[in-house]
Image (tube, rainbow, N blue to C red; front, side, top):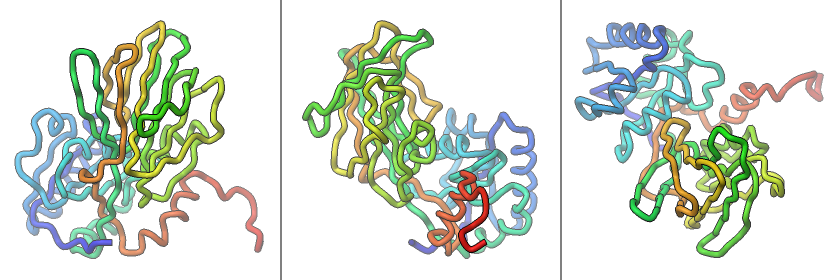
Amino acid sequence: MEKFYKPNTIAILFNEKLNESENLAIKIKNDISDDFEVFVQSVAVALQNNLPSNPDLLISIGGDGTILRCAKVLNGTNCPILGINMGNLGFLCEIDSSDVDSKLQKYLSGDAVIETRNKLKINLVSSNLKKEYSALNDLVISRGSKIRVVNVEAFINGNHFATYKGDGIVISTATGSTAYSLSLGGAILSPSSNNMIMKPIAAHTSLMGGLVIEKDVVISLKASSNEDLSISVDGFIDNLIEDFDQIDVEIDNENKVFFIRSENFENLYWNSLAQKLDLRKGDSING
């Protein structure tokens, strides 16, 4: 992993729905403003107006959803994210809010490394428009509020693979493999993986744990239903789609997301994941 060096300019973005996150953002700014150029914004404002300058580090205060929105703000840049968790699991966050006083300065001094995560490049092609999206977690195609079957035709590099009948489909990155895909019974990928997971939602003919598909492969999806269809990108970008609109999904070989991690992050990752998923119930083999 690449070494992280002490930043000059720091952006602090907080979840505007959590009063505690704004208070923590202001506290951090007051604590470090003598040593760094610091500005504070809500994520909502940053998404609407962009950042006032290009930071060397972005501190995200909230949970994983806040980080997903921060990744959208930083889309196409090399600025790394340091996540401070105000929520529950916080798979993407590096520090819990209760540990800020004891741990933050270590990262700001450059005693850290940069971890790279892959994103999805998503192209929506319909009869009257083309749109491109970028996802750190996942793309979800689902039905509207009424209970109707969704038919999703899935193509792999242009070859028809399957037609799923159910509630929709999820395409996730390695990062998203611990999110919605996991709740559907999908596999967990190593965070450094450049594979994708394709997992149907409540499909009548579900394909076990779904498919794990390598990079440089394009998944094309065409959905149809008797009711409204929508796509959701990272859980906060939602758009209606028409029957048989084509959605092409692939690993983005150019646009990445970068995170600040402790130098022993790779050794601790699986231990931390097991704890967050509460996988260690009962006694160990060795007692």
